[in-house]
Length: 268
Image 1 (cartoon, rainbow, N blue to C red):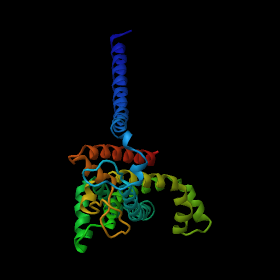
Image 2 (image 1 turned 120 degrees about the vertical axis):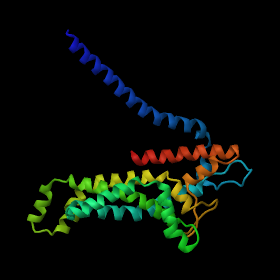
Image 3 (image 1 turned 90 degrees about the vertical axis):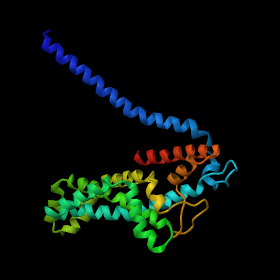
Image 4 (image 1 turned 45 degrees about the vertical axis):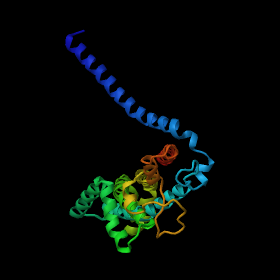
């Protein structure tokens, strides 16, 4: 074997080992986080955690039922706002856009996707909270929905562009209009990918804390309406984690485990 061939094989083995090690580290981080949460919070994830309100300061026990329901309401509002806007925007880019306008929209969406969540929280605070002078569920859902828009928009565009042109041509050859072709042929063909993108966007915003501190704020009780502050798992985790009580710390670990579990289930 020549020296050059030996060197090429050595470099190949080294790079293969390095890339494999990096992949192992990337996977191990998730399992380490999951194991750490299970170790610290697994014993506190019980029936009371899902069905009871937080106990007063100084009393042990209780749960985060209000925060779990609150997170669900916030994500519902976020989906109702972010998914339609992102979906229709993606349809425009993929099916109707020319050159200049789609470039501006894509560039803006990419910029919005990179904006820090706390900045979006301040924007929602100025736009929704300040005019009515109080925090609300609607404001929190609006902030999370804004964060969902660029993810859904860009994903929708990519999935629509992946639909074979023959499907469009066949529908239009049968006399279907442009919009009829999109709504009856193109969108159903890309529906699975778009649904996946929407779920990934929900998982992306489910753990956001900063926007909710400026909009939904928090509540230790039930929030039956949509125009008042509401509890959420991320904010409760933050509040309990920085608190001085050991029981709060255990509850924060348990809430973190539940939140991570919900995100993992959504991604699957």
